[in-house]
Length: 498
Ligand code: G6P
View (cartoon, rainbow, N blue to C red):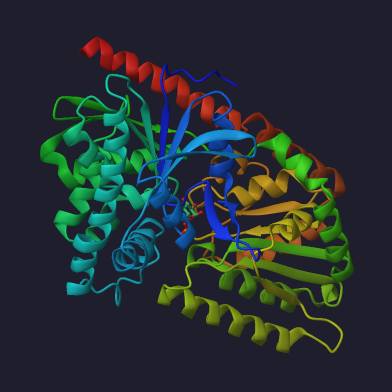
């Protein structure tokens, strides 16, 4: 791993932090690790860099920790990593507007092309108000926290790395007060084509682009998102910027902003160790007991972008076309509940259950249920199922990367076949070795299930091997190191420019 290239600290900023606090039954405070690969990746950096992580207080206990720290940061040790942790405490009403009205669904839906524009969204007082008194307020609170940390370090120059769509306007607020700051922001979800942003009133979409351009580097998972971003800058605030497509640079107010692609990945060694842990082995026995001859698997956060209903419809069509597989196959769907305060997610959950009921009633028998849905958050069970699948269905409508494809591809023991949507970030790396599908084309998904099941053993093992090698080659260290190299180069460009 590249040593931390900065003399000083790294300040990480994200809505969901690496650690959250709860109180155990004994009344003692205990920590819960934030989910997702990002936390693993960035906590790994703590081994070589001083880190302070700024994140939203998600629980009353997080707020308690923040109050104890006088609103500032406090040193914590987690997974043997020592880091500074600072919680941003927002008023619950304000946070609700920020998270449940603007970030999810409004921005999330735009970036994943989920709105059915003939009927939704309506932008009314409620949305304008939530932008001003929710999203902007939380972004300001984050900017205050970042500036506070920068002020405390005086002439030292930490690198600030912000993450994701919750914090689009934060960088401009930091830049106003700290013109010299080094700001880097990673957008972990797709960056859509520029017209998609026109769902938002002009001042809102422009504030988003201007906010991002207050960074020194804006990072995405794929070149496709970088291109879309460059075009968006030109289309949405063209008079203020000059876009150099050849070098992926946007010049704004005399500053050069780099747009770059770094495909995120997983910590392979860590994940392989986890796959052999006792808790995963125990869950594997559970999966073995429920599976039949063939296991089709999907593992997803229960999100509209994941295209869960169409995946089941395709399975229904597959069973119609190939009844010889009845009784011999199970489609196991491990769905992690998500964003339950957003109405669209609740409606989607009901649609999923309705579809499953229809298909299970149509094809099922007293002793065979074609689709087995588990709505739960059981990571060890998911990892166990990764090892066991014959077919993995990743048919997302749009997905920034999709780490399930990488995690499951790395540790599967059955030479399982990956069915992968061409609209996932992972498709740029794994497209050659998967069965590539258009997420709207049910015929091709049904056919892909069949092709995966009848594929020759040699071909399956070749494809699975190539997926494993690709994931290992581009693992999380590479993701971090390439960003560090660019940050170093950008710092020196800025220094030379004076
Ligand atoms: C997905 C996206 C991330 C995003 C996260 C937020 O995992 O890929 O980019 O930050 O959702 O999830 P949350 O549970 O915090 O709403």
